Amino acid sequence: MPVLPVRKGGVSLLIEIFLLRSGGSDRQTLVRSTGDRFYFRILGSGGVGKSALTVQFVQGIFVEKYDPTIEDSYRKQVEVDGQQCMLEILDTAGTEQFTAMRDLYMKNGQGFVLVYSITAQSTFNDLQDLREQILRVKDMDKVPMVLVGNKCDLEDERVVGKDQGSNLAHQFGCTFLETSAKAKINVNDIFYDLVKQINEISPQGKPKGNHRKRICALL
Ligand SMILES: Nc1nc2c(ncn2[C@@H]2O[C@H](COP(=O)(O)OP(=O)(O)O)[C@@H](O)[C@H]2O)c(=O)[nH]1
Ligand SMILES: [Mg+2]
Image (cartoon, rainbow, N blue to C red; front, side, top):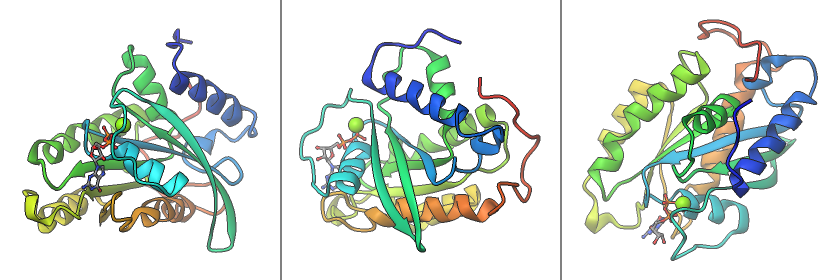
């Protein structure tokens, strides 16, 4: 077990691992939820609005200024299609000191939100590598994922076209949403869609396919 940095996000991750391990012998929890618990990861370049989206979803407020180094996990209970779900959301900041830490939270994540800003082309370009890293770490061909083009309220500053976003999502085989944490556009949909994607894998916890191999260990 790698030594984890004593950050709030790291401690939250340890708690998640404990919950996943105590959630039963079925190690498919890496793919399926542990009961009604879902582990989500918010990823993307700095400044795209990862924290703003997370806080808007969890607390219903828009944070104008947010510390770019804050990495923390949030919890929210929601009802999706009549099912009570506890969402554990890790808002990442790319500040982890060890690659092992990043690998660990990717490995334990069940649903991934890849965020770019429609006002910054480089944040869009960064996502290809990020997705490849997730698939490599999880050793899967496909994972529940939503591609998010945030800051859609800034139409005047748009440099990434909507068609670019939807083409990339098509290539990734995932859902695409343009959102605004500020104007509260499509924010909840990100998380509800991920719950549905995870549930679609299989109600019995047996993935329908797309897996190179079954994952049997957490670490
Ligand atoms: N106009 C606008 N600004 C946003 C939106 N989302 C985030 N921001 C702003 O963009 C900056 C970076 O957001 P933050 O959530 O800290 O980005 P992070 O580094 O990805 O977590 C902050 O000043 C936010 O207020 C949005 O949807 N619209
Ligand atoms: Mg942040």
